[in-house]
Length: 70
Image 1 (cartoon, rainbow, N blue to C red):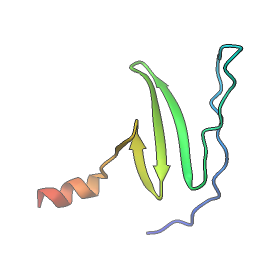
Image 2 (cartoon, one colour; image 1 turned 135 degrees about the vertical axis):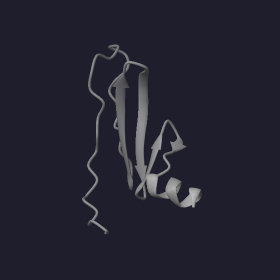
Image 3 (cartoon, one colour; image 1 turned 30 degrees about the vertical axis):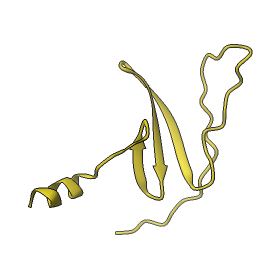
Image 4 (cartoon, rainbow, N blue to C red; image 1 turned 90 degrees about the horizontal axis):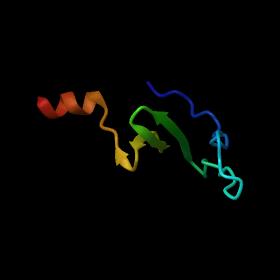
């Protein structure tokens, strides 16, 4: 099942920032980025060409894990 790719929109991290450090745009051509603030600290979530990465490490889909077990 392939869903159509929605247009990528520029995402901006909002929140308290030092006055001398402006908010940065997180989106770039073909890449969606989100900063997630959790109890364990901030993490960068990226989607590049339909593949998810967390803090630069590729997220392995569950289907791929099941295929490796077989």
